[in-house]
Image 1 (cartoon, rainbow, N blue to C red):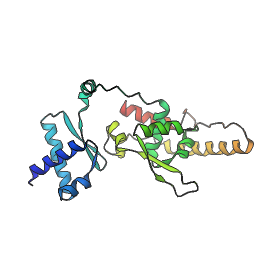
Image 2: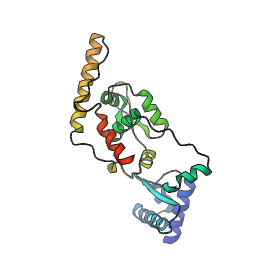
Image 3: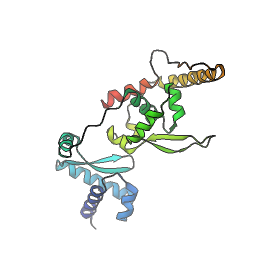
Image 4: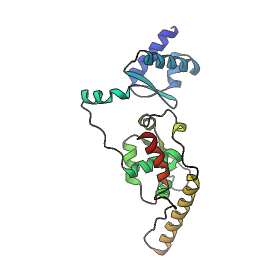
Length: 220
């Protein structure tokens, strides 16, 4: 096949798949290298833009997906009779921010940062496809570790995690201080059989608000 035919083949594969495809898999099927496949994908993206097509090409890490343009979302929702998803709660945004900026992390880590049980919120984020289980730590109990998904990148309109807005400079120090304080309270509660008191960092309600604010400002 010539370059034009290969570009058309890439378009057909992405359209038929509906789901993101690994660039390495596309290259394997086309029997060409990854660099050439990247060039074909760039040509396809440019052609869709030049023709003002209702479709566009999304880059999601090492994956690519064909999708409709955001300005047509209301019309597509109407024609398919789709209901708008319930917005994420404040707690869900906070948990998602903690995971996105620190992944891969365990549920215990998230709970140490926020100072409250996060089982229900993590389950909801998994059901929404925004986070996923990414293995287990080789520690006693082998706890699950969580990270974000390509669907997370698509929802927040970024191609790579590096494109997430930066956190305030002192966020890392406050994070460490809060985790240490909450862990100390947990141990004291366990020893004294008392109700746990959650220690919050100075000048903030929660350490994760620094992360949540970055999310809200960039993606609201």
